[in-house]
Length: 224
Image (tube, rainbow, N blue to C red; front, top):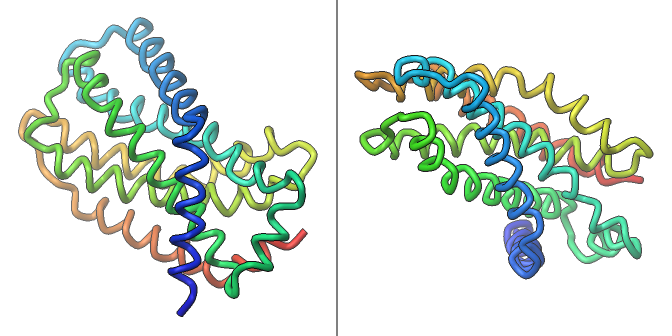
């Protein structure tokens, strides 16, 4: 029963560390702004074209940002052997991964929700009527990205080529999330918006399956 209290304490540490420096969020937001600006001046889409290609560009930017954000997920714990100290301080090692996962999901969601109105203005897409469904799609997609990214970040943090290894491993595994999230978002950007329930269901199942796998094998991911 100590899993969630331990995870909450570790989550508080993650949040305090990030909001004290704000380096990760600031860097990620600036990166996505540059990517979206480059996309907009490269394609210069019309309103109808924005509804077709905008969701794909948006989720591609989110995926790139996630790979940048997750690079530092376990690097802080490499200094002074902090990870070993954390493992000794909790009874269930999954609490460490759960706290990292929650923090990564929260940071990614904050970035996405901050940039959504900027994207809507740049690409002339109306999101007011479907903002609640977009929030659901963003949450499920971001959770899936964070689950896979957190697991791979734990693996790659101890590798010599971790900056290259994480994107190489993560991007192929997250292709289903990218495709389905894009299709769900595209349906919500339509002139007559509708919800792709099959896509929502797929994202939910993906999250449950990979979260269960992380729970079952998480202890081995933290071994040196």
